[in-house]
Image (tube, rainbow, N blue to C red):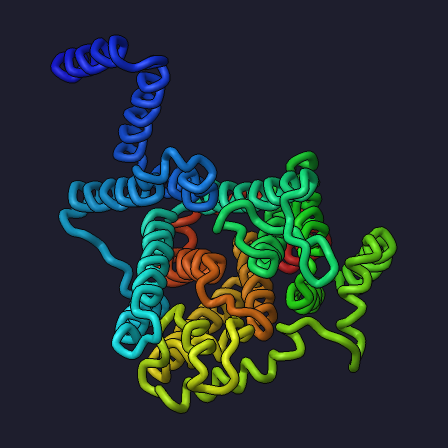
Length: 467
């Protein structure tokens, strides 16, 4: 410790001579040192910190930090602390071996194999690296969330960061930082965590079920209403992205929510009233955009009118390169090549065509196995906890995750959502609940707490059933 103190004194003594405002570097060093200690002492802090950095993207917000790769540093530190703690406590590195995780690892292998047939190998390599980052995120979640408290902590941090992405995009919108396309002003993200209008809409909308279940989970009314209003705010922001595919996803969320709730009539009435009120509050440019959803004919934008053509190109890519596809992330390069029809630079606009065309039959089979295992886990989770009063909160979150998956699938029908991190964050949380609650026993891993007052009539029914 004395040697460290002497070294710091020497470094900042020299900085004070040659560098102006060297105290800023001292504060930064102290913050970094404190976080390193916290991450190694409490590895779950590494996960929370990585979640913040992953979604905030400091290298994009502050280009001066891009060179040091904050995401890579924090992610590497979090993984290192996890590995060190596992070696100290267990004497070995414990890797998840469940079917969901293995299918994701296999899909990464399928992506890597597509490099050999890719129309743009560099882009395929970049896609593999991006997916590897998502897998690191997934691995940290599955390995570190083993208590109810940690699950709630992570979800709160995650949805608040999603709310930040939406609020930051809206702030830019108010100051003129938006995309004017298709005769409308379209909300867009300020970093790649938000993305283009369609991607931003998917990011915000698929988090809405998580805001809702957190609102039901907490008993404090101020906290409860905060999450409800943030979820409603995400829906409002989605409307000014101009993404018609997101409206399909919103319909999926609404349908799934009504189907899973015990107060179907009340929820349906609230949805109808909010929908009518929201429509009349929506500016005319957006009303015209969404009115197109109800029109069978009329002028559509290039992506809409050419969607069938794009899908045909995607099917042709799959038929010509059925084994490995045209390369993960390389759909646009293949599409503009002219080898599969009239060249254009549009994305696939369909999740399953995206997978089949870019990673071939191997990637499609593996990814469908991943999806099937995920839905199977959710089904098992809902059945095994359906009559256990103390595990009502597990039912609540499982239903929220299921609705999120429905929204992702709905948006995937008209969007290329394969690399959206929401898929894999929800998958990791489902694995956490399934493996560590159902398979290993909720009594050992998650200590039951008193019933939540927000569960309403459903909880009362369960309480009476238990009595």
